[in-house]
Image 1 (cartoon, protein in one colour):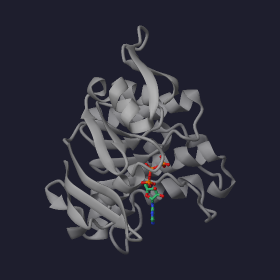
Image 2 (cartoon, rainbow, N blue to C red; image 1 turned 180 degrees about the horizontal axis):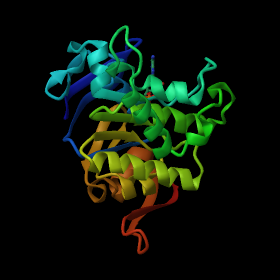
Image 3 (cartoon, rainbow, N blue to C red; image 1 turned 135 degrees about the vertical axis):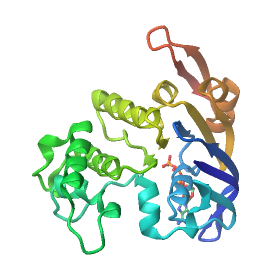
Image 4 (cartoon, rainbow, N blue to C red; image 1 turned 30 degrees about the vertical axis):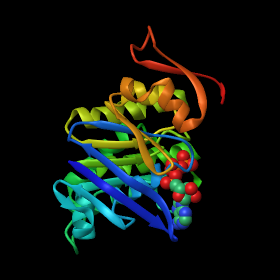
Length: 257
Ligand SMILES: Nc1ncnc2c1ncn2[C@@H]1O[C@H](COP(=O)(O)OP(=O)(O)OP(=O)(O)O)[C@@H](O)[C@H]1O
């Protein structure tokens, strides 16, 4: 579904990503992990068509993202940004319903089916009780969940989420990652930026570890989360062990190198 090859992205004449290659088939949930400033958000934004590669290519469903018209791209890709600040006083329901816009005719109103999708997305993200609230008055976590509802309502084959659990409590973190994984299991392609390596190992089918604008390692969590890769990428000493309870890997950091 997503093919990235020899990707170089420059912003304000600085090279942010270089030589990035990544292939993500449908039905996978890939966690983008790596230190601050590694280029994770830039990579997600480039796949979303918001940055233009200076070299290489980003194909979604076989076509370069930049060759697609915005509306067509919005039907292919839902993008949940890291910054969830919303300055307009729309209600949470109106914001969620905006996820349906790529599917609504130019001068048409949302159909009953669009409303049903929005309601379903709010139920799936546990935000139904916020429907009538102005998004300007929501807490950071509530806003993050409503923007996820909007992305889910968009019902696109590709879902890109930049740190979707950064403002969430323990319970909501699990709910959201379970929901994203269910989207992948249902055949969507999910790319998610996460800082919590334990959650990433538990919920993602694959990981891509970025550092300094390059992919240090990618593949199954056990291939990526090795002490050597973590030392290279983060400059920390870490122990990686299987967790008896979850069955996935856990990373314990010992100290900075
Ligand atoms: N418009 C820009 N002009 C110049 N440099 C930029 C621009 N946008 C981002 N950068 C730089 O690119 C690098 C990668 O940024 P990016 O936001 O992709 O990192 P990240 O891995 O998502 O980091 P974090 O985990 O802190 O969110 C950073 O050093 C950042 O300062």
